[in-house]
Length: 464
Image (cartoon, rainbow, N blue to C red; front, top):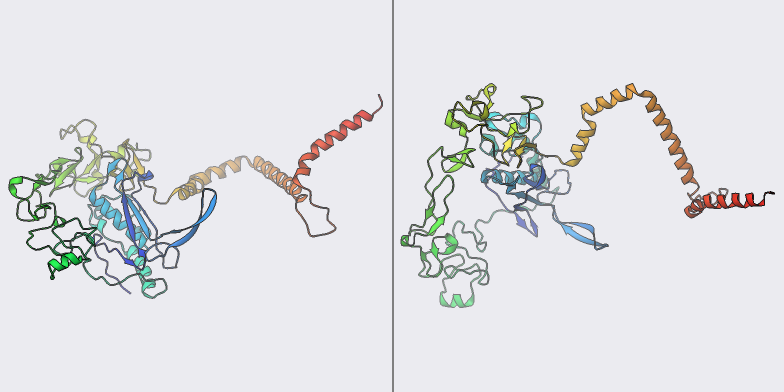
């Protein structure tokens, strides 16, 4: 079965019979450049991911065992990375990445699904992303296959299918959707807006207006605050231009915006000039967003200094802005190398903490060192430490040069193991009636003292 995958920003929240797909956003700086975590669905029936039911676990609370239910159909993303705010576009891609996990896609593998280059990597790439490459907002062919396998199982009723057809707008969620004039909440207790009817209309309101409907404005009102910030809540009218009420603060790439007196929504702010410096001089404004590279000022394109260029390159060097001539990767060089040529500050331009580095393999930390993204966790790191080729070759060389020590260690281990088994054997009960009774550990512990006492008594009985 084939599925049409919508753009990443079309997110469907599915709630059915107590099963909810929940992605939460926090402002917590996780270690290792981690931007999100989520349970991964599987077509084989393993726990976690979309449509997964609550699982009962036993936990120890205050020294007592307690049963509790945990949802494995969840995910979490953070808006902070190395003490810096994550760009909105990257947060959107992180949300799509974690939802991809929930729908059954692991990180992109093999190499065909993480091409890199000018087109960039796909949504399920394991490491960093900038969000400005064509592939960044697409699922790879590998992800589409993995997600399709999970959806096939759900549709085939092998796993519980929690999907249901969309019924369009939902009146009462405080989001003004298609067909709604306003949306102030579910009932009159939740609705604090006197300009709008809630989903459940009270008998009193019904008696005053028999044609009253949920999520519609009340009679003789011009607007509702639920429609936008440019509506006066006390009079239900548009904010006059004479108020000069600011509804959007200015940013590095756009001017502030004020209410225009004709709509409840805040007008789009005017953009600052393209190529205005932003993000502490490490980016340029393009169409109102801080998304361009300073390399554009010198008719060059942004590139990355990578650890592949030099085997022992300084990690700080990887967090310097680099530019190249067009698509020629052989011309990639740090801005520190041509600082004098283009009147750049000495030392070049450093990337901001939290910026991708080393060709999207890591993020710059607060000390402007490139830190690799920990995509697999501590167990994989330990495996790579102990079982990597360099470590195995070192161990093999040591064994070859010190074979006699290896033999002695092996013999010693066998002797110690035999002694341990012998000591434990006398304490192991046996069903054989001909065997001697198993000794208690306390008897073994007292044995040296008893032996010492016998020796003392024997010495006392010897004639002088």
